[in-house]
Image 1 (tube, helix red, strand yellow):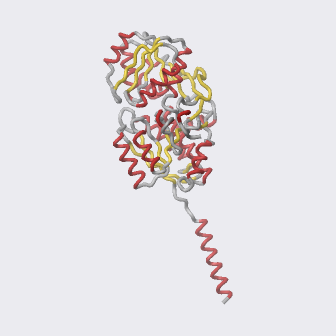
Image 2 (cartoon, rainbow, N blue to C red):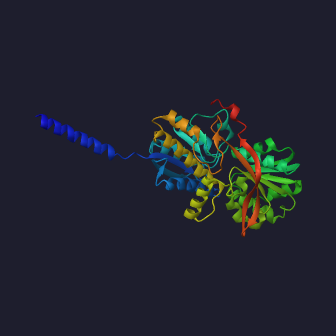
Image 3 (cartoon, one colour):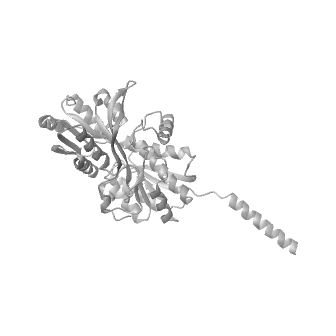
Length: 392
């Protein structure tokens, strides 16, 4: 009888051991609602591709934890975004929501995730409202606060000695944040502000107003296809030689420069990232992206990659426990223990980045137009809304 009991116990221990060693961890589900179509579609495509490149580097994992990334196109439409995120939350049971490009989408979908206790981690859009009074313990931004690169453009324009500027942006939250950011650090006179429709392609009326105003320089924030169309029309109108252009990095990314060609020469832009930043993480990202996608990455791709690496650092620290141990996952995100492609990176108390900003010039090198860093314009810069946030 004792022999039989001993045999049964041994068999049970063996079975339990096999069960443990054969255990496969369920992947952490990450919902990515982004813009893959419309004139701004390449922004979301690059965020997606940068993010998935980081996942591929770990053979389907982030921080050693299996992940499942669900990607859907919002078409730059808040109604679509709402429907997609509802499915992500109710049907797919995601733990993390990411991917949003435009700031007409984020105010709709971010609260949906936050009310459900889901982590919202932005690779791009970061409206001022969520950086200040409406900040949330589960809301993180891996890119910048919307105003940030525009603030750097204001610094750059002032350093370059411009005294009179005309400003142009789409009439939505990110456009308003853009002009507010530029004006916050520009020491000259703003002679006119022009707001256009989001998605607008014809700028004949606006170009006529610019010609009549005769500004010393123009600052414009027209993301994606909007910027391509505007710069082509601006150049064709012969205004490049009359009114210099100082912009944030969104309006002089590599996709836009490829589209406008030599017309982009001399444009001054500002960014937290550029291909010529000399650090190991950036070199790995550039090499991997060029090999896999056979194109040059935009700053949006760098932000998607950084977002994935941030998530990876928190997954590694918590063993993949996201919703099971929110406090630990939140703490790990705040620590931001990952190598960013931009170099220095840490979070302010409102969980938006503190990082360096650069002023760049568009030049032609090896037959191609590209941005070249001139100098650092700000060190350890943080956004203007951090004091309004109650998180500490």
